[in-house]
Image (cartoon, rainbow, N blue to C red; front, side, top):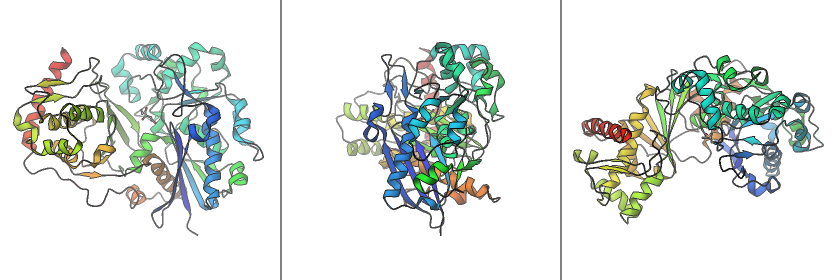
Amino acid sequence: MIRWFLGLDSSTQSLTASLIDPVERRIVAERSLNFDAELPHYGTRNGVLRADDPTVVHAPPLMWAEALDRLFARLRAEGLDLSRVAAIAVSGQQHGSVYLTAEAPAALAGLNPARGLPEQLRGVLARATSPIWMDSSTSAECEEITHALGGPERVARLTGSAAFERFTGPQIRKFWKTDPDGYARTAHIALVSSFIPSILAGRIAPIDPGDGAGMNLMDIARRDWSREALAATAPELARRLPPIVPSSTVVGPITPYFVARHGFDPAARVLVGSGDNPCSLVGLGLVRAGMVAISLGTSDTYFGSMGECRVSAEGEGHVFGSPTGGYMSLVCFKNGSLAREKVRDRLGLDWAGFSRAIRATPPALGGRGLMLPWFDPEITPRVLRAGARYRELSPDDPVVCRAVVEGQMMAMRVHTRWMGVRPSCIHATGGASANAEILQVMADVHRCPVHRFETTASAALGAALRAVHGGQADRGGAPAWEEVVRGFAEPVAGSRVDPGPDTAAAYDAMERAWREFEAAELAR
Ligand code: XUL
């Protein structure tokens, strides 16, 4: 009997399962459970609970737990035999934290299959709701931590990111400051990606360097807790955190609860969890240094695999541990689809017209005209005063279609240089990756081949592939990552776009002018 591997992605709005067969290299099933629709008694909207203060965004951890039972029951109802699952790995929305009392280990170890998870876990939560990545209520705590650690550059060099409101350390500090009794009741702090494996394995699970790096608490170079960062965050934090272990570590066999309730094999292994971005890295096949994905969505995200740990001196983007052993970067550009749509709408074009305008305009606009697409306040580089900037260019000229895409790609080229790796290939995903002209500009500006990826659940797939790798590593033979992802994380056939033969010089010249323009606009 061929064994299956299960990836679970506990994301903001849903829990997704990706069940794969590594021998025939096929996805056996991919199913999602939407929290709002299927667990309405938690009262979430888009998976979250909002407070009067718009910066406060939480979610109920019992909902994430109950979703496990629901999704497993549904897979079984479809006739999928879960006893075939050899190993399970979890992906979680990054940064979110769960606060557990000293009674949690006993409750997890003794889960009774005759009763549901929420009623058995409710009593061990030291905090009823979990702050998640959309919460931005910790600016004061970010400042305090930054000050204690010696400035933003120091925090970035130490932990892989400057202090960010959504990161777990600032959130823990806020909890300690605003609810010292709740903090005192907390014996264990979990991430979403360690809470789910804790339930599955029936014991407090460790944290991996992929999601540990999203806390402002981990020494990014050593991949272990930074005593200094812990001290700057909250008292006696070390004893509340589990160890950090490599992403391929097996936490233990699945707990008898899931064997009795859903028919899992008692020998099925549960791996340490990781963040959704590190899991997507694997799910998109970025298993070698220099491989990059660009996701063209509402915001554009550039994330890539790095061999060495390098951090941006300007605090641009984030560095997380990669589940494949090295590091990954993640840089977010706020003005993505939104900026492209603004240009298209102003010119009264549809997407076909937008593409025609790109084709009709020479690379780098023939050396005439530049644009910075900051329609909204920008994250990278940090721009608070919104408004697109034009040099020698009218916003009503159709060449702006090419200018906006080139401006976006040049911003990525310039603001990811700190990674010290020239991309060897780019995997393009997200809605706008269907546009051939945009992919050509991407290939030309970054000077490497671009492949299109059509993935809907790259984090769940990445987790399933981690389960294959970790499940086999545990048996003594760690397979090569290229071999693990082969046949699963593959680009759309025939989608390769190569850089044009004579575009390099034009974009090198453009880069010089563009850097000068951007510096001048940032200084204003
Ligand atoms: C990454 C981040 C988000 C969440 C979404 O830093 O905040 O991508 O991981 O799930």
